[in-house]
Image 1 (cartoon, rainbow, N blue to C red):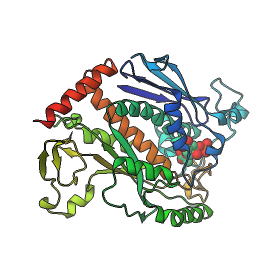
Image 2 (tube, protein in one colour):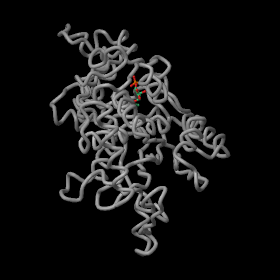
Image 3 (spheres, protein in one colour):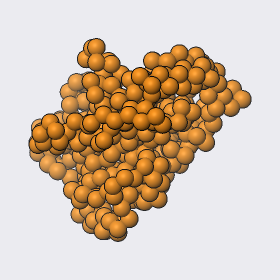
Length: 388
Ligand code: EPS
């Protein structure tokens, strides 16, 4: 399964084309819309989310409620585009109109400046428009399709925030993927510990007043994963490496870890490896899951536990110093509309890209022209590894 996204933040619409989805998968616009809505929510979202109510239009690859195996095209209209008709016009326009909302003061931490250097733009809006986190709308749409595939295979996925603007959330032990999903989805800030809710919301309010932004750490967990996805044979066949790329590719994400992650550098081997157990009902299990479900770049049948760190959004109401690219004089960076935090939304994006990579790997490994064929192949593999 492969996909591409296209679209600018204030252009007419965002688009994705996905190829390689098995035929026979039940798929409705509502399956996608509910995740698009989740991405737009969360405490700390800014003004743009009040304008948009993202809804997908499926224009190819689905007939009478089921996928056909043909490429699937997904479209989301940017309502805000109506106010940007000239600024974002595809056709050439009069020179005097071109300078409206022209950006020459790049924001530190955003793609504005380097994008301009690379593509030789005199208006940095050309960098801003495509590098905006608005693009993650389509990654969530694609992820929603991937999650439909995973759900058919009894693979569950959840995300929750574990550090919010430097504040660590203590997570109760022993929560199932389902429980994490339920608790996090009840919370406006995607935390499983409700005791912290108010304190963090107050902190977000304070940050907003200061014109500043905060990031944090999000954890995604995938349960019901068959052992043996990914491979140790080549650097680019390792599934944890593919997930790492997908997570760091999310706007503003700067790092990734699996299981105990960077803590492994502080522990002895006996405190890191997960001892192997076997029982008739489940087959192979582990005493712990410190390695986050991966050994040798392959899933080991334990839940996949991946964490990503998001830097604070670089678009600040309290702008930082920058340089005008026409005069090279010092200037305050351009103030564009922003969100004090988009961390709960970023968790939905992370869940979506993780689901997409997991589904891609499954479709690569098993015969998957049709959903029933895929289900039978996965069931046979699960049975085999259980009795290995
Ligand atoms: C976003 C859309 C953007 C911002 C935000 C997230 O819309 P606009 O630029 O029209 O306000 O709200 O993106 C950024 C702050 C950024 O730096 O990319 C979205 O759809 O998630």
